Image (cartoon, rainbow, N blue to C red; front, side, top):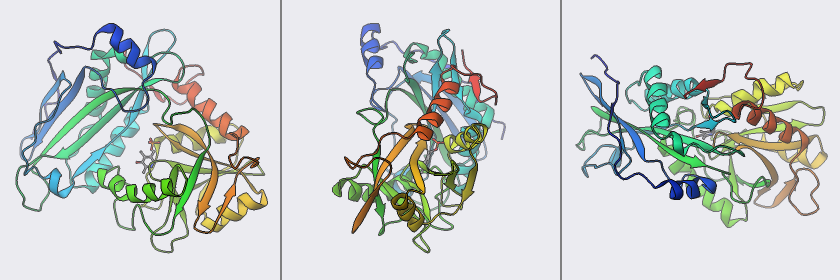
Amino acid sequence: MADDLTPTIELSTTRVPDDERAALIADPGFGRTFTDHMVTATWTNGQGWHSAAVRPYGPLQLDPATSVLHYGQAIFEGFKAYGHADGSVFTFRPEANAARFQRSAARMALPKLPAEAFVALADELIRTDRAWVPTGGEKSLYLRPFMLGTEVGLGVRPSAEATFVVIASPAGAYFAGGLKPVSIWLSEEFSRAAQGGTGAAKCAGNYAASLIAQQEAIANGCDQVAFVDSVERRWVEELGGMNLFFVYDDGSLVTPELTGSILEGVTRDAILTLAGEMGHKVEERRLDIDEWREGVASGRIVEVFACGTAAVVTPVGRLRWRGGEVSTGTAATGEADTGPVTEAVRAALLDVQLGRAEDTHGWLHRVC
Ligand SMILES: *Cc1c(COP(=O)(O)O)cnc(C)c1O
C-alpha cells in the first residue's frame, strides 16, 4: 500500500496557440474553457495511489459499467490560482481544500488522497499551464480537482478503484453582468441536504439534488435558491453552492452555524477571520427564515451576502417566497446596491488573494 504520486509529465503537442489563448483569457466567463493539460492518478484497493500524470487535456474513457455512473461516488473541490503583479502565481489556502477533500472522500467511502499530493499535483498542473494564469482585474485560474469511483461492475459497494483528476479553467466574473445583487428564492419544498446526509461533503450528488430547486428559483424570477434545514424547515442553511452572511444594523455579522448539512466554505472561514479583524462582531449561530424576512423588513438586517470561491462575495438583494418578498437596502428598483460592509469584506478578501494586501495569515501558497 505504498502510494506513489510523483507524476510523469507528458506535454501536449496540440496546445492552444498563443493568440487564441490570449483571447480566451481576456473574456473567460466561468468554466467554459480549459487549459492544455490535466492531472490524473489512480487508486487501487490493496495497491494505493499510482500512475500519477500530468498529461494533455482530453476525454476520460469510461466503461459503461463504471461504478460512478450508477452509484454516484464522486467528490470535487474548487480553488483559485492568482497571478500577482510581479509575475508570481499563488493559490489561496489549497491545504484547506485538500483537508476538505479528505473529509468528503471519507463520507463517500472514497480513498484518502494525501494532502501534500493534492497540493503538489495542482501546483504541477499550474506550472505546466502557467501561460493560462490570467493577470489583472479579478481574474484567476480556477482549479477543479475531483475524484470518482472507477471500478467496473454493478455490485453496490465502495469502488475498489478511484480516479483523481485535476483540470484548470481561466475564470473571470462568475455571474455575467458584474457585481449585481442576486435575488434569492426560498425553497420550501426541496432540501439540498438532510441530517445525517452528505450536506457537509462536497459531493456531486448534492448539486444534482439542488438543481430542481434552482430551476424553481429561475421560474420565479430569481437567480439563486436558499435552503432551510430539512427537519424543522425553518433554519437558514445556504444557497445551492454558496454560504450566507447577514449584516445587522449594529455592525455585527451572522452566518449559519455548521450543522452537518451545511458545506464548510473556505471563503466563509476566511471572512469570519477578516470581518473580525475589521472590527465586526462575528457570530456563527442558528438563524431562521423569519429572522431573515422580519430583519430585512424592519431594517435590523441591513445587508445580506453570499460567498464562495467561484463568485467570491456576492450581494443578495431580494428574498422571495411563495406569497411575498423583502429587499435589502434601497429597494426602489427591487434590487439593492452592494452595501458598504459587503463591499469592504469583498475588497479585503480580494486584496489578500491578488497580493494587494499583506498576507498576515499565511493563506497564500506560492506555486511559481
Ligand atoms: C463549495 C461550496 C461552498 C463554498 O465553499 P468555498 O470553499 O468557499 O468555495 C458553499 N456551499 C456549497 C454547497 C459548496 O459546494
